[in-house]
Image (cartoon, rainbow, N blue to C red; front, side, top):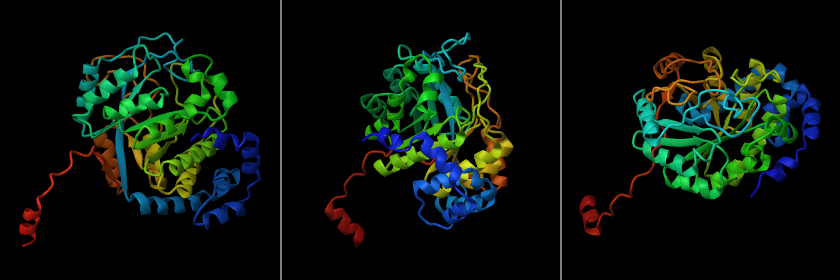
Length: 384
């Protein structure tokens, strides 16, 4: 199965036309419709919906409480290497940026994970730049195996891999992956990625499907808001998530809603994305896909994250560092981007508790060996 034909069935011109043709009455009808279609998704992302954000937020809040309750799962990134061969114009890890770079050994990764575990977190996201000569699939698999002893869940956010490589990671304890398409505008994607393996738009686009086929239990996707018209990229992200959920119903699918943040790349060609736009994006996603995971990172401020939580956010990063080896390995260097919410795990947990929400530090654990079979005669005794 491939997502590319689905994407190509919704050309950008058609999407823009439908977005701007939607009326306030169209949006109201969507909000009173139980099962929404892709056309309805476009209406919820449309400019006409901006005057109905309160109505959208009310429905989104109700759907979120129904499916997730007052809980939010915490995770944190663990950057293992910032060496990269790509030249993404907006990224602090751009291969052309002159900066001191670090690459952790497997033993250093394990120490970083142990430091994270001391904060109470048990969900970790392993990240590397795209430099296969250093951060090979075998290296990433070894690092995952090394941190499983102190982490309940190990996911990765790395370069696009083959199905066989994802299967290797899965066999070594990786249960999920996240990958951002960055933008679904193929022409723009080529300009933003002038060199490096990441330049292959289609190979990256189909990576979530390959990971799902390899056995990953959770798949996270997203567009980096600010690279293109956010409404278009939001719609294509929703389209991608809907396809993934339909193709692999047993896989837990989630969408991240990151905005561009300042980095050492000094990228300035940014399409503005306001706080109200983020409210609309999250509310529309929750209305359209009530069971979808929605992730909000520390790219956003503490105040905004707290305010967005009731609209549908189910996962938050906490205790974040976007630089390599800063927790236990003694390294210092430029992070991938600047974070806005600098609260510790405890501070974030306490703030959410005052709002009536419970921080979930562990919601998954790899199943253990099957329970021993009880002989028939022992079962008879137990019944007696």
